[in-house]
Image (cartoon, rainbow, N blue to C red; front, side):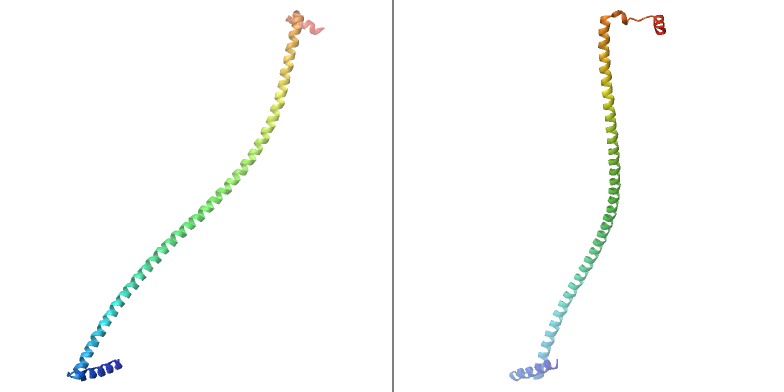
Length: 169
């Protein structure tokens, strides 16, 4: 600062030598100009500082909002993760239950198949036996019909007395 004042004095003296003014007046004029220049630069710096401070405050507020938003989003995502975890547990339990139900149903199906095969075999045996009985009865009817045609009197009903006498013989 002293070097600036000295330079101004020297410049004022040099300028004063060229003018007819008082050298002190020239120094004071130069100092007023310098003062005005320094005040103007100070005001410009103050304005720049205030703008920078406002920008910093805005950036800080925005960062605070971003942090608050991110924290809220994080909490929501953690809740979603926890819900998904419980859904997985429920689904796993249901899968295990359904797997055991499928196993039981497969066992019942196998048992039902075994019973059905046994019943099918029994039905086939009964059907074959009934078919044989029907065939035998059909042959018996045809034999009886032929014999009736040959000797119709042999197949007439006899009285209970004749049956009793014929059974004692």
